[in-house]
Image (cartoon, rainbow, N blue to C red; front, side, top):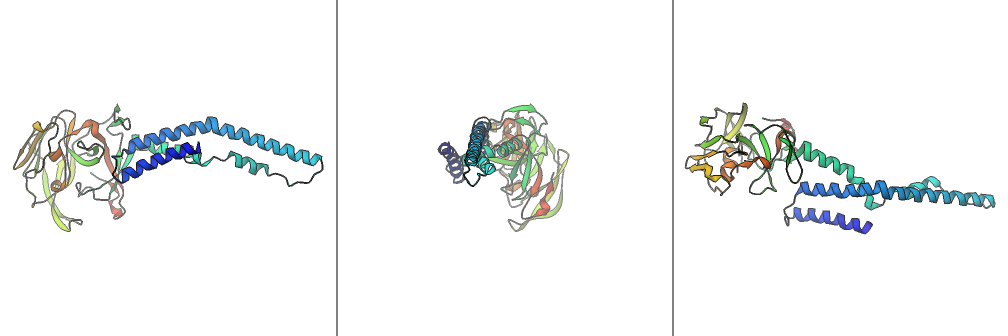
Length: 321
C-alpha cells in the first residue's frame, strides 16, 4: 500500500506542478473532489480494515509479551519487563501512507464542503473593479445566494435569489470557463443596456450619476474622474478616463452578438433570456460584456460580499456596495 499511495500522491503533486507551470489548464474544484474521494476511501479502509487489523495484532503482541513475562517469572529468570503500553502504541501507530491520506480526509472534506456550498475565497487580480475593489483585495464569495450548485458540473439543484442590478458577482469567464472573473451586474434578462458616450442607460433611461472627488489611482499614479451612480438602488462609485475613446475596440464574436449594436458612441445590447450584462466599475479599464458578450446564468459562481483581507491596506477590510 505504501508504494501505491506514493504513486497516487505523486500524481496529485504532478498535476499541481503542471498547472502551476501552465502546461495544463487546471481545475481546482475537480482536484479537490478527487482528493475527497481518494482520502475518503483510505479513511473508510482505515476505520473498517486497517485499524481493526492493527488493534488485533497489538492485542496479540501484548498478550504474548505478558505470557513470556509470566513464564520467565515462574522459572525464576530475571529479565527486564516489556513496556506493554509502549508496545501497544507502537503497533497501533498509523503508517505514513495513512497519515497522508486518511488522516487528512476530515480537513479536506471540510474545505470541500465550505468552498463548494458556502463561501469561496477569491483574490482581485486586476484593477477593473476600482474604486470598489482594489488589486490584492481578498474577498469572500457567497456560493449559495443564487442557489446551490453541484461542484465540478455546476448544475443548480436548489434555487435561491436571482442576480439583481448592482450585484457584484464572480462568474466563469464565458470565452474561457476555467477562469473566474468579477464584475457588476448592470443588465438583467430582457433589459436593453446601452453605454453611449460613457453614460450608462438601462431600458432607455440614463442611470443617475453625479461627480464626486477625483480618485487617485496609485497603480497608474494619476487622478481619474469619479462618479456616483445609482444602480439597482445602490450608490456605486465608478471611474471614467477622458483620454479613452467612447467606441468599443477589439470586440470578439460572441454568442448573441446580433442583439448588440456597435457605433462610434459605444454599444447598445438587448440581454437574452438566462443571461446578464456585466461591467467593471473602472469603466475604461475593464474587459467586460461590452467586449465579449453576456454571462450565462449557469456560469455564475456566487455573489461577492466581503473584503476579508488586504495585506497592503488593512482599512480595506469590510463589506462593500
